[in-house]
Image (tube, rainbow, N blue to C red; front, side, top):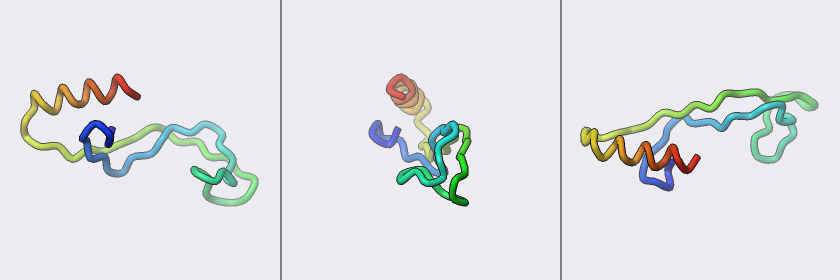
Length: 62
């Protein structure tokens, strides 16, 4: 989404049973697993038509 001009904040990818030792997403105790839902927040301006178009284009690329 950031590549399409949206500034995301507090975003996280969806993960399903990723080992806690994973070099990119790992954290926590050794030999554990990570499960998390996809979430993101956005900072938007007041031009709703432009925002809607950018969101639709960004969503199509996910």
